[in-house]
Image (cartoon, rainbow, N blue to C red; front, side):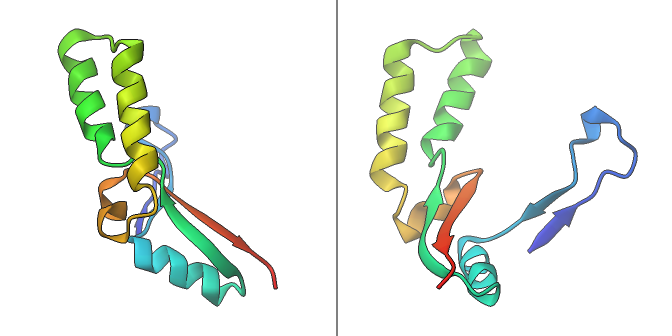
Amino acid sequence: MGVHRNPTGRDEWFTTAYFHRPDELAAEGRDAGLEIDAVLGIEGPGYWAIRRAVGRTGDVSDEDLRLVLDAARAVEREPSLLGASPHLLLAGRRP
């Protein structure tokens, strides 16, 4: 797990954040006593494509956004692609 700290309060330096690989996030949940239901990639690898498109044009069509969201849903549980998503979600519950 990686940690980025921003003790300055300067917004341009981002915030304090904790970074995990998918397997590390699941292990942290188990260590906390959770039964893990899933580790999900929120944006999926399509995030990088949509980010590039926005950077080029400043806008993304509704159709393009739908395509990226459909792609994210299609691979959100695929273990080999989880690390390609900028954000992960751990779904778990207390036993």
